[in-house]
Length: 512
Ligand code: MSP
Image 1 (spheres, rainbow, N blue to C red):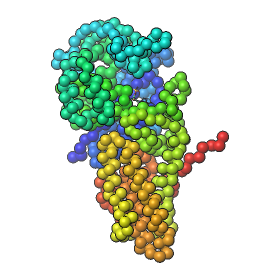
Image 2: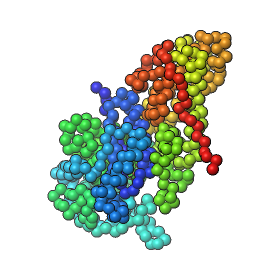
Image 3: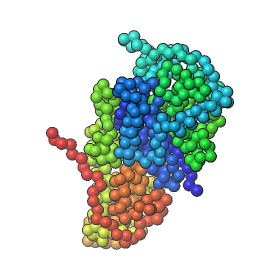
Image 4: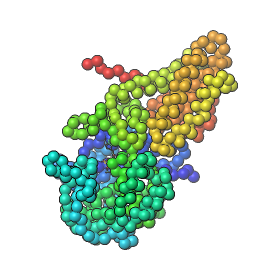
Protein backbone atom coordinates (compact mmCIF):
# COMPACT_ATOMS: atom_id res chain seq x y z
CA UNK A 1 0.00 0.00 0.00
CA UNK A 2 1.24 3.47 -0.85
CA UNK A 3 2.07 5.76 2.07
CA UNK A 4 -0.43 8.61 2.45
CA UNK A 5 0.40 12.30 2.17
CA UNK A 6 -2.08 15.02 3.13
CA UNK A 7 -1.21 18.59 2.15
CA UNK A 8 -3.37 21.68 2.57
CA UNK A 9 -3.42 25.32 1.56
CA UNK A 10 -5.09 27.86 3.81
CA UNK A 11 -8.71 28.36 2.89
CA UNK A 12 -9.11 31.77 1.31
CA UNK A 13 -11.29 34.57 2.60
CA UNK A 14 -13.96 35.40 0.09
CA UNK A 15 -14.02 39.11 0.85
CA UNK A 16 -12.53 40.04 -2.50
CA UNK A 17 -11.24 38.75 -5.81
CA UNK A 18 -8.30 36.33 -5.74
CA UNK A 19 -4.88 37.69 -6.62
CA UNK A 20 -1.40 36.39 -7.28
CA UNK A 21 -0.59 36.08 -3.54
CA UNK A 22 -3.34 33.49 -3.22
CA UNK A 23 -2.17 31.70 -6.35
CA UNK A 24 1.33 31.53 -4.83
CA UNK A 25 0.20 29.40 -1.86
CA UNK A 26 -1.86 27.18 -4.16
CA UNK A 27 0.97 26.64 -6.65
CA UNK A 28 3.51 25.78 -3.96
CA UNK A 29 1.14 23.22 -2.44
CA UNK A 30 0.45 21.89 -5.91
CA UNK A 31 4.14 21.36 -6.64
CA UNK A 32 4.36 19.36 -3.43
CA UNK A 33 1.25 17.32 -4.12
CA UNK A 34 2.35 16.52 -7.66
CA UNK A 35 5.87 15.65 -6.54
CA UNK A 36 4.59 13.29 -3.85
CA UNK A 37 2.27 11.55 -6.31
CA UNK A 38 5.17 11.14 -8.70
CA UNK A 39 7.21 9.75 -5.83
CA UNK A 40 4.76 6.98 -5.01
CA UNK A 41 2.54 8.56 -2.35
CA UNK A 42 -1.23 8.36 -2.03
CA UNK A 43 -1.87 12.11 -1.89
CA UNK A 44 -4.83 14.11 -0.68
CA UNK A 45 -4.50 17.77 -1.56
CA UNK A 46 -7.03 20.20 -0.16
CA UNK A 47 -7.81 23.82 -0.87
CA UNK A 48 -10.98 25.88 -0.52
CA UNK A 49 -12.64 28.99 0.81
CA UNK A 50 -13.20 30.53 4.26
CA UNK A 51 -16.61 32.11 4.03
CA UNK A 52 -17.82 33.19 7.45
CA UNK A 53 -17.05 36.06 9.78
CA UNK A 54 -17.44 39.76 10.04
CA UNK A 55 -15.03 40.62 7.25
CA UNK A 56 -16.93 38.58 4.68
CA UNK A 57 -20.30 39.75 6.02
CA UNK A 58 -19.17 43.34 5.57
CA UNK A 59 -17.77 42.74 2.07
CA UNK A 60 -21.12 41.23 1.05
CA UNK A 61 -23.09 44.14 2.44
CA UNK A 62 -20.71 46.63 0.75
CA UNK A 63 -21.44 44.80 -2.50
CA UNK A 64 -25.16 45.04 -1.78
CA UNK A 65 -25.51 41.27 -1.73
CA UNK A 66 -26.72 38.56 0.61
CA UNK A 67 -23.71 36.84 2.17
CA UNK A 68 -24.48 33.43 0.68
CA UNK A 69 -24.92 34.74 -2.86
CA UNK A 70 -21.78 36.81 -2.45
CA UNK A 71 -19.66 33.94 -1.15
CA UNK A 72 -20.99 31.63 -3.89
CA UNK A 73 -19.70 34.06 -6.45
CA UNK A 74 -16.27 34.71 -4.95
CA UNK A 75 -15.69 31.11 -3.97
CA UNK A 76 -16.25 30.19 -7.62
CA UNK A 77 -13.55 32.62 -8.67
CA UNK A 78 -11.06 30.94 -6.29
CA UNK A 79 -11.98 27.57 -7.77
CA UNK A 80 -11.41 29.12 -11.19
CA UNK A 81 -7.95 30.37 -10.18
CA UNK A 82 -7.05 26.88 -9.00
CA UNK A 83 -8.14 25.44 -12.35
CA UNK A 84 -6.37 28.07 -14.41
CA UNK A 85 -3.14 27.66 -12.44
CA UNK A 86 -3.34 23.93 -13.18
CA UNK A 87 -3.65 23.14 -9.49
CA UNK A 88 -4.38 19.44 -8.93
CA UNK A 89 -6.37 19.65 -5.70
CA UNK A 90 -8.32 16.52 -4.81
CA UNK A 91 -11.04 18.49 -3.05
CA UNK A 92 -12.26 22.05 -2.67
CA UNK A 93 -13.95 22.80 0.62
CA UNK A 94 -16.31 25.65 1.42
CA UNK A 95 -17.03 26.48 5.04
CA UNK A 96 -20.66 27.25 4.21
CA UNK A 97 -21.27 23.60 3.29
CA UNK A 98 -23.60 21.62 5.56
CA UNK A 99 -20.95 18.95 6.19
CA UNK A 100 -18.60 21.62 7.50
CA UNK A 101 -21.18 23.10 9.83
CA UNK A 102 -21.76 19.60 11.19
CA UNK A 103 -18.03 18.97 11.63
CA UNK A 104 -17.45 22.30 13.40
CA UNK A 105 -20.38 21.69 15.74
CA UNK A 106 -19.11 18.18 16.49
CA UNK A 107 -15.65 19.49 17.33
CA UNK A 108 -17.16 22.20 19.52
CA UNK A 109 -19.23 19.63 21.42
CA UNK A 110 -16.18 17.46 21.86
CA UNK A 111 -14.15 20.31 23.33
CA UNK A 112 -17.07 21.27 25.53
CA UNK A 113 -17.60 17.71 26.76
CA UNK A 114 -13.92 17.52 27.65
CA UNK A 115 -14.36 20.64 29.80
CA UNK A 116 -12.30 22.96 27.63
CA UNK A 117 -15.02 25.48 26.75
CA UNK A 118 -16.61 27.90 29.23
CA UNK A 119 -18.87 30.94 29.01
CA UNK A 120 -17.45 34.33 29.98
CA UNK A 121 -17.27 37.83 28.61
CA UNK A 122 -14.78 39.33 26.18
CA UNK A 123 -13.63 42.85 26.69
CA UNK A 124 -10.85 43.92 24.41
CA UNK A 125 -9.62 44.75 20.94
CA UNK A 126 -10.57 43.09 17.69
CA UNK A 127 -9.39 43.68 14.12
CA UNK A 128 -11.99 42.68 11.56
CA UNK A 129 -9.43 42.77 8.74
CA UNK A 130 -7.28 40.15 10.50
CA UNK A 131 -10.24 38.47 12.20
CA UNK A 132 -8.02 38.48 15.29
CA UNK A 133 -8.07 39.60 18.94
CA UNK A 134 -5.24 41.78 20.17
CA UNK A 135 -3.88 42.71 23.55
CA UNK A 136 -3.76 46.41 24.44
CA UNK A 137 0.03 46.16 24.76
CA UNK A 138 0.36 45.14 21.09
CA UNK A 139 -1.37 48.24 19.71
CA UNK A 140 -0.08 51.50 18.33
CA UNK A 141 -1.94 54.74 17.53
CA UNK A 142 -1.76 56.50 14.17
CA UNK A 143 -1.80 60.25 13.47
CA UNK A 144 -5.60 60.23 13.25
CA UNK A 145 -5.81 58.69 16.72
CA UNK A 146 -6.93 55.33 15.37
CA UNK A 147 -5.62 52.33 17.31
CA UNK A 148 -3.84 49.82 15.09
CA UNK A 149 -2.85 46.18 15.37
CA UNK A 150 0.80 45.26 14.67
CA UNK A 151 -0.35 44.30 11.15
CA UNK A 152 -1.60 47.85 10.56
CA UNK A 153 -5.24 46.77 10.72
CA UNK A 154 -7.58 49.11 12.59
CA UNK A 155 -8.98 47.64 15.82
CA UNK A 156 -12.25 48.22 17.62
CA UNK A 157 -13.11 47.74 21.27
CA UNK A 158 -15.50 44.88 21.83
CA UNK A 159 -17.52 44.02 24.92
CA UNK A 160 -19.55 40.87 24.45
CA UNK A 161 -20.53 37.69 26.19
CA UNK A 162 -18.32 35.02 24.72
CA UNK A 163 -17.38 31.40 25.01
CA UNK A 164 -13.73 30.74 25.69
CA UNK A 165 -11.45 27.89 24.79
CA UNK A 166 -9.15 26.96 27.66
CA UNK A 167 -6.03 27.39 25.54
CA UNK A 168 -3.88 28.33 28.54
CA UNK A 169 -4.12 24.74 29.75
CA UNK A 170 -2.16 23.51 26.73
CA UNK A 171 0.80 25.84 26.84
CA UNK A 172 3.30 23.45 28.42
CA UNK A 173 2.22 20.53 26.30
CA UNK A 174 2.51 22.67 23.18
CA UNK A 175 6.01 23.89 23.96
CA UNK A 176 7.06 20.32 24.75
CA UNK A 177 5.64 19.16 21.45
CA UNK A 178 7.42 21.83 19.43
CA UNK A 179 10.68 21.11 21.21
CA UNK A 180 10.38 17.37 20.73
CA UNK A 181 9.52 17.70 17.02
CA UNK A 182 12.07 19.97 15.35
CA UNK A 183 10.32 19.62 11.97
CA UNK A 184 6.90 20.62 13.33
CA UNK A 185 7.30 24.27 12.34
CA UNK A 186 9.35 25.55 9.42
CA UNK A 187 11.35 27.49 8.49
CA UNK A 188 13.62 27.48 11.54
CA UNK A 189 13.37 31.24 12.12
CA UNK A 190 9.58 31.03 12.27
CA UNK A 191 9.80 28.12 14.69
CA UNK A 192 11.93 30.27 16.98
CA UNK A 193 9.38 33.06 16.67
CA UNK A 194 6.59 30.76 17.82
CA UNK A 195 8.67 29.45 20.71
CA UNK A 196 9.45 33.05 21.63
CA UNK A 197 5.77 33.89 21.62
CA UNK A 198 5.07 30.90 23.85
CA UNK A 199 7.39 32.27 26.53
CA UNK A 200 4.54 34.64 27.50
CA UNK A 201 1.62 33.07 29.32
CA UNK A 202 -0.95 31.90 26.79
CA UNK A 203 -4.40 33.31 27.36
CA UNK A 204 -7.70 31.58 26.86
CA UNK A 205 -9.17 32.28 23.47
CA UNK A 206 -12.51 33.95 22.83
CA UNK A 207 -14.25 31.60 20.42
CA UNK A 208 -17.71 33.05 19.89
CA UNK A 209 -19.28 36.36 18.94
CA UNK A 210 -22.76 37.76 19.42
CA UNK A 211 -22.64 41.07 17.55
CA UNK A 212 -23.19 39.66 14.06
CA UNK A 213 -24.71 36.52 12.65
CA UNK A 214 -22.75 35.35 9.56
CA UNK A 215 -21.20 32.25 11.04
CA UNK A 216 -21.83 28.78 12.38
CA UNK A 217 -24.21 28.83 15.33
CA UNK A 218 -22.81 27.65 18.64
CA UNK A 219 -24.49 24.35 19.52
CA UNK A 220 -27.05 24.91 22.25
CA UNK A 221 -26.68 28.72 22.30
CA UNK A 222 -27.86 30.23 19.06
CA UNK A 223 -27.22 33.82 20.13
CA UNK A 224 -23.54 33.08 19.44
CA UNK A 225 -21.71 32.29 16.25
CA UNK A 226 -18.35 30.56 16.35
CA UNK A 227 -15.20 32.64 16.02
CA UNK A 228 -14.33 32.38 12.34
CA UNK A 229 -10.86 30.91 12.94
CA UNK A 230 -12.26 28.04 14.99
CA UNK A 231 -14.63 27.25 12.15
CA UNK A 232 -11.92 27.78 9.51
CA UNK A 233 -9.26 25.55 11.05
CA UNK A 234 -11.75 22.72 11.36
CA UNK A 235 -11.94 22.57 7.54
CA UNK A 236 -8.85 20.35 7.50
CA UNK A 237 -10.86 17.72 9.37
CA UNK A 238 -14.19 18.21 7.59
CA UNK A 239 -12.68 17.48 4.20
CA UNK A 240 -11.58 14.01 5.26
CA UNK A 241 -14.85 13.01 6.88
CA UNK A 242 -14.81 14.32 10.47
CA UNK A 243 -16.63 13.54 12.74
CA UNK A 244 -16.77 10.14 11.10
CA UNK A 245 -13.38 8.74 12.00
CA UNK A 246 -14.23 5.57 10.12
CA UNK A 247 -14.65 7.50 6.84
CA UNK A 248 -12.48 6.27 3.99
CA UNK A 249 -10.63 9.57 3.77
CA UNK A 250 -9.88 9.68 7.49
CA UNK A 251 -6.75 7.59 6.76
CA UNK A 252 -5.11 10.87 5.73
CA UNK A 253 -5.15 12.31 9.25
CA UNK A 254 -2.88 13.64 10.66
CA UNK A 255 -2.04 16.03 7.84
CA UNK A 256 1.55 15.85 6.67
CA UNK A 257 1.77 19.53 5.91
CA UNK A 258 -0.24 22.69 6.38
CA UNK A 259 1.27 25.22 4.02
CA UNK A 260 0.46 28.76 5.16
CA UNK A 261 1.60 32.35 4.77
CA UNK A 262 3.67 33.86 7.57
CA UNK A 263 0.76 36.08 8.61
CA UNK A 264 -1.30 33.10 9.72
CA UNK A 265 1.38 30.89 11.22
CA UNK A 266 0.33 31.52 14.82
CA UNK A 267 -3.20 30.32 14.16
CA UNK A 268 -1.78 27.09 12.73
CA UNK A 269 1.13 26.56 15.09
CA UNK A 270 -0.50 27.58 18.38
CA UNK A 271 -4.30 27.69 18.28
CA UNK A 272 -4.82 24.71 15.98
CA UNK A 273 -2.51 22.28 17.79
CA UNK A 274 -3.99 23.37 21.14
CA UNK A 275 -7.49 22.65 19.83
CA UNK A 276 -6.42 19.25 18.55
CA UNK A 277 -4.72 18.38 21.83
CA UNK A 278 -7.86 19.39 23.71
CA UNK A 279 -9.96 17.22 21.41
CA UNK A 280 -7.59 14.28 21.74
CA UNK A 281 -6.80 14.26 18.02
CA UNK A 282 -3.38 13.78 16.46
CA UNK A 283 -1.42 16.89 15.50
CA UNK A 284 -0.37 17.71 11.93
CA UNK A 285 3.20 16.65 11.24
CA UNK A 286 4.36 20.00 9.94
CA UNK A 287 3.31 23.59 9.43
CA UNK A 288 5.42 25.62 7.03
CA UNK A 289 5.12 29.38 6.62
CA UNK A 290 6.09 31.02 3.37
CA UNK A 291 6.87 34.71 2.97
CA UNK A 292 4.96 37.52 1.32
CA UNK A 293 5.84 39.14 -1.89
CA UNK A 294 5.55 42.63 -3.21
CA UNK A 295 4.79 43.70 -6.76
CA UNK A 296 7.50 45.76 -8.46
CA UNK A 297 8.79 46.59 -4.98
CA UNK A 298 5.45 47.71 -3.56
CA UNK A 299 2.92 46.07 -1.32
CA UNK A 300 -0.05 44.86 -3.36
CA UNK A 301 -3.10 46.94 -2.58
CA UNK A 302 -6.32 48.04 -4.12
CA UNK A 303 -5.52 51.67 -3.36
CA UNK A 304 -2.18 51.55 -5.20
CA UNK A 305 -3.98 49.67 -7.98
CA UNK A 306 -1.21 47.10 -8.40
CA UNK A 307 -3.19 43.98 -7.55
CA UNK A 308 -2.30 41.28 -10.06
CA UNK A 309 -4.69 38.67 -11.34
CA UNK A 310 -2.54 35.60 -12.04
CA UNK A 311 -4.86 34.66 -14.90
CA UNK A 312 -3.64 37.70 -16.84
CA UNK A 313 -0.03 36.64 -16.36
CA UNK A 314 -0.83 33.08 -17.41
CA UNK A 315 -2.49 34.43 -20.56
CA UNK A 316 0.58 36.49 -21.42
CA UNK A 317 3.43 34.19 -20.41
CA UNK A 318 1.88 30.74 -20.09
CA UNK A 319 0.88 29.14 -16.85
CA UNK A 320 4.04 27.03 -16.61
CA UNK A 321 6.34 30.02 -16.95
CA UNK A 322 4.40 31.75 -14.16
CA UNK A 323 4.53 28.69 -11.89
CA UNK A 324 8.23 28.28 -12.57
CA UNK A 325 8.96 31.93 -11.93
CA UNK A 326 7.17 32.05 -8.58
CA UNK A 327 8.94 28.95 -7.31
CA UNK A 328 12.33 29.98 -8.71
CA UNK A 329 12.55 33.69 -7.98
CA UNK A 330 11.49 33.75 -4.33
CA UNK A 331 13.34 31.74 -1.71
CA UNK A 332 10.44 29.77 -0.30
CA UNK A 333 10.00 30.83 3.31
CA UNK A 334 11.36 34.36 2.75
CA UNK A 335 9.75 37.50 1.41
CA UNK A 336 10.28 38.33 -2.23
CA UNK A 337 9.23 40.48 -5.13
CA UNK A 338 7.34 39.92 -8.35
CA UNK A 339 8.51 42.02 -11.25
CA UNK A 340 7.58 41.66 -14.86
CA UNK A 341 11.16 42.25 -16.00
CA UNK A 342 12.53 39.41 -13.87
CA UNK A 343 9.77 37.08 -15.04
CA UNK A 344 10.63 37.84 -18.66
CA UNK A 345 14.33 37.41 -17.93
CA UNK A 346 13.87 34.02 -16.29
CA UNK A 347 11.53 32.89 -19.03
CA UNK A 348 13.96 33.86 -21.77
CA UNK A 349 17.22 32.85 -20.09
CA UNK A 350 16.34 29.82 -18.04
CA UNK A 351 13.39 28.32 -19.86
CA UNK A 352 13.85 29.29 -23.52
CA UNK A 353 17.64 29.41 -23.50
CA UNK A 354 18.99 26.96 -20.95
CA UNK A 355 16.35 24.25 -20.92
CA UNK A 356 14.61 24.85 -24.25
CA UNK A 357 17.84 24.97 -26.18
CA UNK A 358 19.33 21.93 -24.52
CA UNK A 359 16.29 19.89 -25.55
CA UNK A 360 16.04 21.47 -28.98
CA UNK A 361 19.73 21.12 -29.85
CA UNK A 362 19.85 17.52 -28.70
CA UNK A 363 16.59 16.37 -30.24
CA UNK A 364 16.80 18.16 -33.56
CA UNK A 365 20.34 16.85 -34.00
CA UNK A 366 19.12 13.32 -33.30
CA UNK A 367 16.23 13.92 -35.69
CA UNK A 368 18.56 14.89 -38.48
CA UNK A 369 21.65 12.82 -37.84
CA UNK A 370 20.90 9.89 -35.59
CA UNK A 371 17.79 8.26 -37.00
CA UNK A 372 15.24 10.17 -34.89
CA UNK A 373 15.44 7.49 -32.21
CA UNK A 374 17.12 6.81 -28.88
CA UNK A 375 20.85 6.53 -29.65
CA UNK A 376 23.12 3.74 -28.38
CA UNK A 377 24.68 4.38 -25.00
CA UNK A 378 28.43 4.05 -24.62
CA UNK A 379 30.78 3.51 -21.71
CA UNK A 380 31.12 6.47 -19.33
CA UNK A 381 34.55 7.39 -20.65
CA UNK A 382 35.59 11.01 -20.35
CA UNK A 383 35.45 12.77 -16.96
CA UNK A 384 32.81 15.02 -18.55
CA UNK A 385 30.65 11.93 -19.04
CA UNK A 386 31.02 11.14 -15.37
CA UNK A 387 29.82 14.63 -14.43
CA UNK A 388 26.64 14.16 -16.45
CA UNK A 389 26.16 10.61 -15.21
CA UNK A 390 26.51 12.03 -11.69
CA UNK A 391 23.70 14.51 -12.31
CA UNK A 392 21.51 11.74 -13.69
CA UNK A 393 22.10 9.55 -10.65
CA UNK A 394 21.91 12.24 -7.97
CA UNK A 395 19.20 14.65 -9.11
CA UNK A 396 16.15 12.66 -7.93
CA UNK A 397 17.52 12.40 -4.39
CA UNK A 398 18.62 16.02 -4.25
CA UNK A 399 15.27 17.28 -5.51
CA UNK A 400 13.32 15.02 -3.16
CA UNK A 401 15.34 16.25 -0.21
CA UNK A 402 14.79 19.92 -1.13
CA UNK A 403 11.06 19.44 -1.68
CA UNK A 404 10.66 17.65 1.63
CA UNK A 405 12.06 20.81 3.24
CA UNK A 406 9.78 23.00 1.06
CA UNK A 407 12.95 24.46 -0.50
CA UNK A 408 11.42 24.67 -3.99
CA UNK A 409 13.92 27.29 -5.15
CA UNK A 410 16.73 24.93 -4.16
CA UNK A 411 15.18 22.01 -6.07
CA UNK A 412 15.11 24.21 -9.17
CA UNK A 413 18.63 25.42 -8.60
CA UNK A 414 20.09 21.89 -8.54
CA UNK A 415 18.14 21.05 -11.68
CA UNK A 416 19.49 24.17 -13.40
CA UNK A 417 23.06 23.30 -12.44
CA UNK A 418 22.53 20.03 -14.32
CA UNK A 419 20.91 21.80 -17.30
CA UNK A 420 23.83 24.20 -17.57
CA UNK A 421 26.13 21.19 -17.27
CA UNK A 422 24.29 19.60 -20.18
CA UNK A 423 24.77 22.68 -22.34
CA UNK A 424 28.46 22.85 -21.49
CA UNK A 425 28.79 19.14 -22.34
CA UNK A 426 27.19 19.48 -25.76
CA UNK A 427 29.48 22.43 -26.59
CA UNK A 428 32.54 20.52 -25.47
CA UNK A 429 31.73 17.19 -27.03
CA UNK A 430 30.52 18.77 -30.29
CA UNK A 431 28.45 15.90 -31.68
CA UNK A 432 28.35 17.75 -35.02
CA UNK A 433 32.12 17.20 -35.28
CA UNK A 434 31.92 13.61 -34.02
CA UNK A 435 29.42 12.89 -36.78
CA UNK A 436 32.30 12.97 -39.25
CA UNK A 437 34.93 11.24 -37.10
CA UNK A 438 33.35 8.84 -34.60
CA UNK A 439 29.67 8.05 -34.94
CA UNK A 440 29.75 5.56 -32.05
CA UNK A 441 31.00 8.25 -29.70
CA UNK A 442 28.50 10.70 -31.20
CA UNK A 443 25.67 8.37 -30.27
CA UNK A 444 27.04 7.86 -26.78
CA UNK A 445 27.19 11.62 -26.22
CA UNK A 446 23.65 12.11 -27.49
CA UNK A 447 22.34 9.22 -25.41
CA UNK A 448 23.78 10.70 -22.24
CA UNK A 449 22.13 14.01 -23.08
CA UNK A 450 18.77 12.33 -23.63
CA UNK A 451 19.13 10.46 -20.34
CA UNK A 452 19.83 13.76 -18.58
CA UNK A 453 16.91 15.50 -20.27
CA UNK A 454 14.60 12.71 -19.23
CA UNK A 455 15.57 13.01 -15.55
CA UNK A 456 15.25 16.79 -15.74
CA UNK A 457 11.86 16.72 -17.45
CA UNK A 458 10.56 14.06 -15.07
CA UNK A 459 11.56 16.06 -11.99
CA UNK A 460 10.21 19.30 -13.43
CA UNK A 461 6.74 17.88 -14.05
CA UNK A 462 5.39 19.12 -10.68
CA UNK A 463 6.53 22.66 -11.50
CA UNK A 464 5.54 22.79 -15.18
CA UNK A 465 3.11 19.96 -15.86
CA UNK A 466 2.05 20.91 -19.38
CA UNK A 467 5.41 21.74 -20.90
CA UNK A 468 7.14 18.78 -19.31
CA UNK A 469 4.47 16.44 -20.65
CA UNK A 470 5.35 17.77 -24.11
CA UNK A 471 9.04 17.35 -23.49
CA UNK A 472 8.62 13.78 -22.26
CA UNK A 473 6.56 13.02 -25.38
CA UNK A 474 9.47 14.23 -27.47
CA UNK A 475 11.88 12.10 -25.45
CA UNK A 476 9.89 8.98 -26.22
CA UNK A 477 8.77 8.43 -22.61
CA UNK A 478 5.22 7.02 -22.50
CA UNK A 479 2.80 8.63 -20.08
CA UNK A 480 2.58 5.55 -17.92
CA UNK A 481 6.29 5.64 -17.03
CA UNK A 482 6.90 9.18 -15.90
CA UNK A 483 7.26 8.63 -12.17
CA UNK A 484 10.47 8.95 -10.21
CA UNK A 485 10.69 5.18 -9.74
CA UNK A 486 10.40 4.79 -13.53
CA UNK A 487 13.70 6.63 -13.92
CA UNK A 488 15.40 3.37 -12.99
CA UNK A 489 14.34 1.93 -16.36
CA UNK A 490 16.19 3.72 -19.18
CA UNK A 491 14.51 4.59 -22.48
CA UNK A 492 15.21 1.61 -24.77
CA UNK A 493 17.78 2.16 -27.52
CA UNK A 494 15.98 2.58 -30.84
CA UNK A 495 12.78 4.08 -29.33
CA UNK A 496 11.44 6.40 -32.03
CA UNK A 497 11.26 10.12 -31.21
CA UNK A 498 8.53 12.29 -32.68
CA UNK A 499 9.68 15.44 -34.53
CA UNK A 500 10.91 17.93 -31.90
CA UNK A 501 9.20 21.29 -31.41
CA UNK A 502 10.24 24.15 -29.13
CA UNK A 503 8.52 24.07 -25.74
CA UNK A 504 9.36 27.57 -24.48
CA UNK A 505 9.14 30.39 -27.02
CA UNK A 506 11.12 33.50 -26.13
CA UNK A 507 9.01 36.41 -24.94
CA UNK A 508 9.57 39.77 -26.58
CA UNK A 509 7.93 42.86 -25.08
CA UNK A 510 5.98 44.94 -27.58
CA UNK A 511 8.01 47.97 -28.58
CA UNK A 512 4.92 50.12 -28.05
N1 MSP B 1 -8.91 32.60 5.68
C1 MSP B 1 -7.61 32.71 6.25
C2 MSP B 1 -6.93 31.36 6.32
C3 MSP B 1 -7.68 30.29 7.06
S1 MSP B 1 -6.86 28.76 7.02
C4 MSP B 1 -7.67 27.79 8.09
C5 MSP B 1 -6.76 33.67 5.40
N2 MSP B 1 -7.16 33.87 4.14
S2 MSP B 1 -6.48 34.89 3.13
O1 MSP B 1 -7.28 34.79 1.94
O2 MSP B 1 -6.37 36.18 3.71
O3 MSP B 1 -5.02 34.42 2.86
C6 MSP B 1 -4.76 33.17 2.31
C7 MSP B 1 -3.28 32.97 2.02
O4 MSP B 1 -2.84 33.87 1.00
C8 MSP B 1 -2.40 33.20 3.24
O5 MSP B 1 -1.51 32.10 3.40
C9 MSP B 1 -1.64 34.44 2.88
O6 MSP B 1 -0.37 34.44 3.47
C10 MSP B 1 -1.55 34.34 1.37
N3 MSP B 1 -1.24 35.62 0.75
C11 MSP B 1 -2.05 36.71 0.60
N4 MSP B 1 -1.32 37.72 0.04
C12 MSP B 1 -0.04 37.33 -0.17
C13 MSP B 1 1.11 37.91 -0.74
N5 MSP B 1 1.14 39.16 -1.19
N6 MSP B 1 2.22 37.14 -0.85
C14 MSP B 1 2.22 35.81 -0.47
N7 MSP B 1 1.16 35.24 0.07
C15 MSP B 1 0.04 35.99 0.34
O7 MSP B 1 -5.76 34.16 5.90
